[in-house]
Length: 450
Figure 1 (spheres, one colour):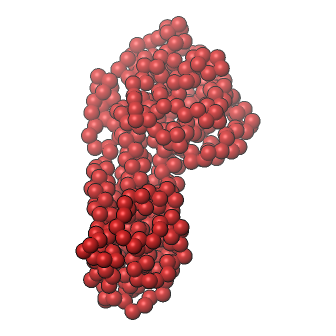
Figure 2: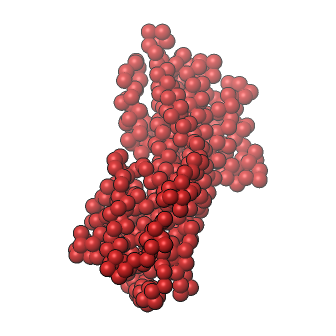
Figure 3: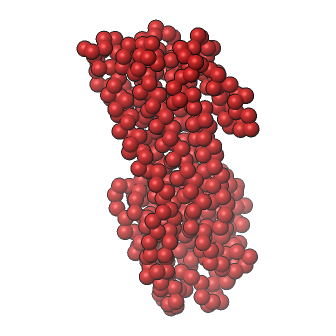
């Protein structure tokens, strides 16, 4: 991945990173200006002063030389559970992305060390929980601890570089960019599975007419897709299918809009000023780029949209077990009574949605004072994107439960699987009697819904 400008960085990419020389030259010129500005001995927060409540304390030259290193060491107070490797890489790429804007004024040498860390495939242990600050200094201290003086190829942090590594919300932004990619894939699965359920119960197709999405292009597109995947309508079993079937278009369209909203918030977070102090217009400017309410709010918004989609999916699954809705044997079993069928699969979906609901409390609610009152509010963007990642995982799990029921319903109805569901037959053997369906769900999650 050759990066010519900051916008080229893709936090979801697994490709090796290389920075184009013209961009490095531009950043080197900014660094020279920053060092000249620092030579004036004017107070610059976190560079020649303490941090937080200690910002009134001026540092001597000898103290400044170790201060940037100490900023990282003293804030690495987290512990397990650690982020998975792909999210940890997204944190590193997120930090790189913000450095390439030039606001941090860090050296080309630090940028090259960061690129080397990303390309080394060494995964730093970054705590998944417990950020607890106005920003994300705790997880970032863990992310970049290996860059602290002399630990990597003899490199030593220069003026302003320790505070720059800790500034803003690059980690949450990088992780959110990764979750956007995952959520888009999940949204497509939601559409395919819902369309299969619509088809197998013989739902009246009227609610899915694109004309019903007037004034809302996202909804109209989703309705058209459901109609296409569900296939031609046979004689509907009833004038109206249960609500969980009829509202599929509205529910998934809302998920897709929420993904787009978060994607735009990620763009704003990366393109905006995240450093503090930032080097802007030839001077150091204290900013509030660490207050990620925009990103946090849209992570929360998507989490709630997914929770609703999972609840609707679980409701359809319950209806699929009802012979009055499907015209098939109760609980989708060959021998109702001697066999329990998929009733326990629905119970798993119920437990999963119950857990999902607890993730929907807005993360920015519940601020507390730290640093002797210097930091008196937070947005907890780190926690918000963590909740979103868990919401995606749990929604995928509920979708797998519904997908297994849709597959079995098609089998019992002796109808061919739609093309969009053919992969299911490749990983789930025919269900002729009760068995440990958890193994089937795991195979679906690892293959079809991966």
